[in-house]
Amino acid sequence: MNRIHLIVSLLLVLCFRETSAQEKKWTLEDCISYAVSNNISLRRQMLQTETAEANFLKSKMDVLPSLNFGSDARIGFGRSIDPVTNLITFKQNISNSYSLNSNLQLFTGFTTLNTISANKFMFRAGLEYEKIVRNTLIVEILGQYYQVLYAKGLEDASKQQLELSEKQHYRILKMVETGREALSQQFEMESQVSADKLDYTIAHNTSSQALTMLKQMLQLDQGTGFDIVMPDLNNLLISEVSYDTDSIFSIASQTLPRLKAIEYELKATEKQISAARGSVAPSLSVGGAVYTGYYKVISDEAAEQASFSSQLKNNNSQSIYLSLDIPLFNNYTIGRNIKAAKIRKNDAALRLELEKNNLYTEIENACLNYNRGKDEFIAAQSNFEFNKKSFNAVEKKFESGLVDVTDYSAAKTTLYRAETEALRTKLQLLIRKLTINFYSTGTYENISFN
Image 1 (spheres, helix red, strand yellow):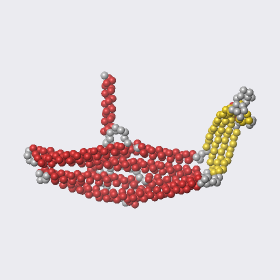
Image 2 (tube, rainbow, N blue to C red):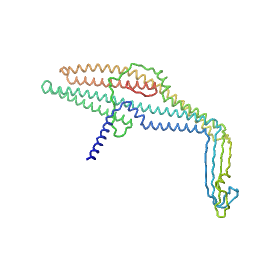
Image 3 (spheres, rainbow, N blue to C red):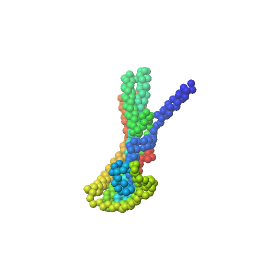
Image 4 (cartoon, rainbow, N blue to C red):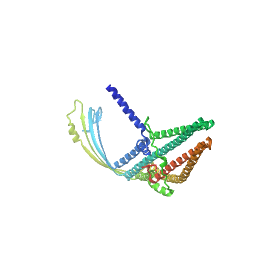
């Protein structure tokens, strides 16, 4: 019995946890925070940034001297050279050598220093590209989140329309039963209820689809319950502001990572040109080596030989060297590298100019759309308020028998369209405002609905 009680308790705990997880509702901030932490594309971009950082570190380490240790062991058969006497021998032998060598580049035409600078700028560009991917992801999440809000708003509006129809249907049904209304009125109202049920079903399915797309965009685990927190759409504030394209662009050109990334790449290509030109200059390096070894004849008639430690001590030799390399002809390799670096610089400059033009166009359209959208929202909101008053008057006339079902349905449909249009223009205006704020700050931090 105790085991059964334990199993039942565990099942209840698991079911409670699963229910709690499914009941959690996500805010916009929750969605963005989760996506930024778990999105695969963003994590891949972070890996590319780490690669750029590793390249930067490697180029800095190139200024340090190299140090290598080597050793080998051999067994000789047949003809070989006796390292002790430097004479040819046919005796079977074993040899073991050890070496330690170091090399330092003294001058390479400043290629190393320019390469360090180039990789530093490429690393900074990688950080900016990481921000670009992050912001792009947030834009997509934001857009889909507002699509869900709009779809849920339409669903609520459709539900309200259905409830109004059901309310009037119930009223007419009672009046038909008492003979105060004709049966045809009941049939017309039933047809209206059926049409509203269809509209509500479509709106509900559209809302579910939008919610599923947002869940897929977040890349949540399979089987995870998901829903969003519905803000009070009636309390979303629309500020009376106007935006100037030139002032927004002036700020955006200094803050947005999409321009900074290309600017860093442009600086990197300038250093790459200098590094490529450095290959034309002579290079100078210095180095040194320490060598020792052991040799032993292993045939039966071999004479007595010095011990292993003695040979390592006695066979020790050292050397230092100074190396000068003057490039005379390298099959156009250096010239090709210089030309390729110049092409990359020109391409980066053109990409920067193109990106500035695209950014200005986007900001100009965003400002125009916001200013136009504000007028549309004011008109749509006014139209909605007017239609609410008009519908209330028609509803009272309908209940008094002064208008028929057709006029009532037409007024209700007009109210529904006005309500959905007011919702659309409000959410659209909020997105446009947030987009302009992004151009001004370069980040979507502290996103809110107001």
